[in-house]
Image (cartoon, rainbow, N blue to C red; front, side):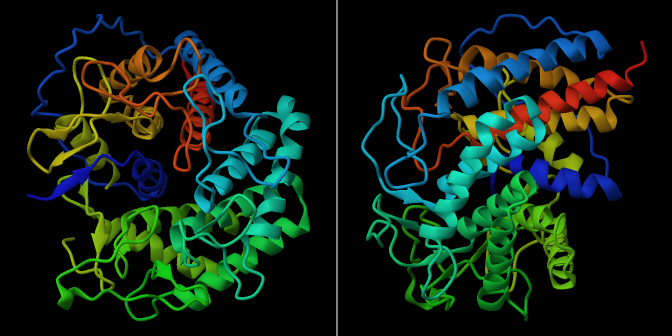
Length: 435
């Protein structure tokens, strides 16, 4: 049995890409998993009308401001060493630092840039944040000797044994994502230069000309590290514990996102070719019937051979029909095995469900009802009504096992992006609603 993870980021990356060309339709959910033991309040579903779209949009927009932007900014800004603090307790007190991680630093820069572009009324507040994040990426996190971004540094900007001096395409992709967005938000040529340098460094050192895609874990100098399966052991990269010498869905999905954002402002032919290559890999190698995904691959992409299927499969096998919410993981055709609900899955799931409603709502009310139940779950359980912000995960009893609000993996990125997208999409739906 294949292990699957509901990766709603794939729904966002692949749905946006695959739905444009169309994908095989799949059956409606047929084998709902075991319901949660906690009794849920009944959901009063509303019709897809202009009035209801706008009401939901206002709720999501309020959560964006109250539970993302207001709690993270400006308290996350490090005015001493640059970049952003990442560790916070439930009540948003600073906690012990674990260093400056490329993924966190770039995600905070990216969300600030998106706010500047998509919420003009907040531009004066967030434009300095974008410049602050860009300066850290360009002046500190970029390796001035060998090029490329460090996987992470200590708080003073020095190489740290916690991260090693290696470089990972996962983190580098987010740095590219942030630099491209920063250029769109600021028109600062330094941002575009950084984004272009990043792409060229990755393409020169990590692109796999034989099998496509990118090698992921590299030395400081830019040499890909290979796997040694003959040893019977798998080496893991620091902090992320990704297997060294293998390719992953995770990294290649984010490369597709970041390359797309860069291509919006830099119409380079090589970049376009790499985008087409990544899309084919995600569509034909990573997504598999009946709507699941493989996570890790050999460098030659050896595995089995889409978008609506992903959501339908997640609703059929990974959905809590009682409370709402997507469980963390399970087997392809079996019951959920890990029933924690991670914040990033839940908020990105909102966007994926609404996108499916936008695409297929005229034929079925399945996705809009699921979206409403999902939003009810996020409001009731994932958002901390006392101290605000989102809990990392929620257990089957509806309680958060971890109370801390921030760390190097949990930024303002997933919830900020999802709430921006959902609020905007609801308003777009309202404009087109017949009423």
